[in-house]
Image (cartoon, rainbow, N blue to C red; front, side, top):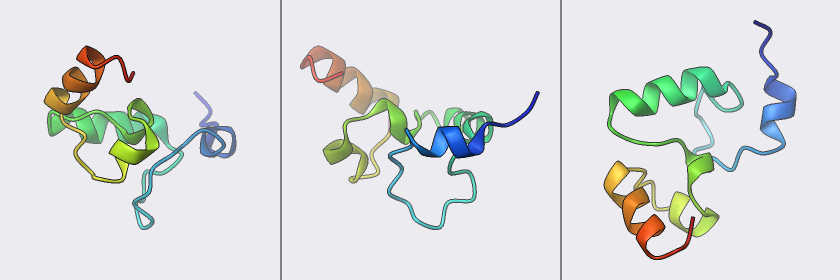
Length: 67
Protein backbone atom coordinates (compact mmCIF):
# COMPACT_ATOMS: atom_id res chain seq x y z
CA UNK A 1 0.00 0.00 0.00
CA UNK A 2 1.25 3.46 -0.87
CA UNK A 3 1.56 5.97 1.98
CA UNK A 4 -0.38 9.19 1.45
CA UNK A 5 1.83 11.23 3.76
CA UNK A 6 1.37 14.56 1.97
CA UNK A 7 -2.42 14.20 2.03
CA UNK A 8 -2.35 13.01 5.66
CA UNK A 9 -0.33 16.07 6.70
CA UNK A 10 -3.24 18.31 5.65
CA UNK A 11 -5.36 16.82 8.47
CA UNK A 12 -2.67 16.03 11.05
CA UNK A 13 -2.93 18.21 14.16
CA UNK A 14 0.02 16.69 16.02
CA UNK A 15 1.87 19.48 17.82
CA UNK A 16 4.93 17.36 18.66
CA UNK A 17 7.26 18.95 16.13
CA UNK A 18 10.02 16.36 16.07
CA UNK A 19 7.75 13.31 15.73
CA UNK A 20 9.08 11.02 12.98
CA UNK A 21 5.58 9.54 12.47
CA UNK A 22 3.82 12.79 11.53
CA UNK A 23 1.72 12.12 8.44
CA UNK A 24 2.45 8.39 8.50
CA UNK A 25 -0.83 7.30 10.07
CA UNK A 26 -0.21 3.54 10.19
CA UNK A 27 3.01 4.06 12.18
CA UNK A 28 1.39 6.69 14.40
CA UNK A 29 -1.61 4.56 15.30
CA UNK A 30 0.53 1.51 15.98
CA UNK A 31 2.88 3.52 18.20
CA UNK A 32 0.10 5.06 20.29
CA UNK A 33 -1.97 1.90 20.68
CA UNK A 34 1.04 0.13 22.21
CA UNK A 35 0.98 2.81 24.93
CA UNK A 36 -2.82 2.70 25.47
CA UNK A 37 -3.22 6.00 23.67
CA UNK A 38 -4.90 7.39 20.60
CA UNK A 39 -3.14 9.64 18.07
CA UNK A 40 -3.47 13.43 18.06
CA UNK A 41 -6.09 13.44 15.31
CA UNK A 42 -8.61 11.89 17.72
CA UNK A 43 -8.51 14.93 20.00
CA UNK A 44 -9.54 18.57 19.75
CA UNK A 45 -6.53 20.88 19.29
CA UNK A 46 -6.67 22.30 22.84
CA UNK A 47 -6.58 18.83 24.39
CA UNK A 48 -4.00 17.46 21.94
CA UNK A 49 -1.54 20.13 23.07
CA UNK A 50 -1.59 18.70 26.61
CA UNK A 51 -0.17 15.41 25.23
CA UNK A 52 -2.67 13.45 27.32
CA UNK A 53 -3.77 11.08 24.58
CA UNK A 54 -4.90 8.29 26.89
CA UNK A 55 -7.96 6.14 26.30
CA UNK A 56 -9.32 7.55 29.56
CA UNK A 57 -8.98 11.17 28.38
CA UNK A 58 -10.73 10.26 25.14
CA UNK A 59 -13.56 8.61 27.10
CA UNK A 60 -13.91 11.77 29.21
CA UNK A 61 -14.19 13.85 26.05
CA UNK A 62 -16.81 11.51 24.59
CA UNK A 63 -18.82 11.74 27.82
CA UNK A 64 -18.60 15.53 27.68
CA UNK A 65 -19.71 15.56 24.03
CA UNK A 66 -16.46 17.09 22.80
CA UNK A 67 -15.63 14.38 20.27
